[in-house]
Length: 337
Ligand code: KG4
Ligand code: ZN
Image (cartoon, rainbow, N blue to C red):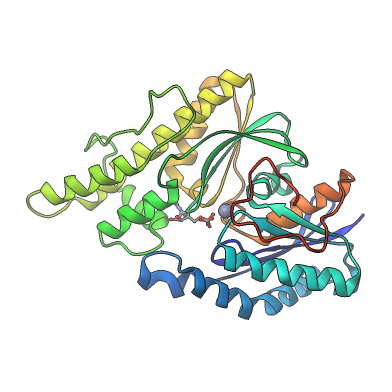
């Protein structure tokens, strides 16, 4: 069974995973998130530099954890896109160097397809077709997964901010720090989700698209106009409810319309406790099987890239050329560059 090393550098996580036949052997992650905190968002040049510094130590850590050496590897997979151009370049250049030096096949893979493929490590083969909802700081997409090694069809996406970006912006305006998702999630536990009726952007729109910029503005206005101390927990709970209500409603509708009974949720926002609970509740009611990887596999990591690489090798998909690009706008329809 082939041993696949996966490298992920599309944003602020340097991830290196090692997978053999759907079994995760190592998942090493070095994050530069602390370096971005004072800017309230990821600074691309800072992220690229951090990837450069973390790359080789993170690969070595993964090899050590898996108890293997570079010479044991059978294939290299790397995120080719989408993501931050400079950040992607570091991973792609490293992957090319390893592939060339070790004379191994190289797979330049789509970051979104990798978010879908990672679930196989935890829950086994994903029945296809399935609907995947990927929600993070960089993306909010609803996809029809016909075959994760071949075809992912975009059904809808955000028309403005990504879901995680909305969490980060609202946290910033409440002075809660960066990244905003985890702290809003925590503060919301003591709040009333019905306290403030925030808007659900595009909820009744027939498309599968979503919008969060109106919601973010509504929160800002409400906070601005509110006299007296801000009830932070209620604002967090009401904002979070608006986001997860909209996301789950669109995802369930997509499953129903497409006649699909498996829903997979991935990306950093999939760690949100209320999103998990509401999705669970609505899927149960609709007879849909919900699959959400554990939080560590939902955020960006190398395991997801190795997991997709492993599936590609297994499916006999042809590797990428050695001059494969770092493609910041890689279309989701393209699984392998
Ligand atoms: O997938 P990820 O690690 O990186 C990319 O953006 O690709 O996702 C990070 C995003 C951030 O916007 C963060 O605020 C959000 O995921 N996030 C959460 C939670 N944990 C992380 N959002 C809501 N609730 C959470 N518990
Ligand atoms: Zn991601």
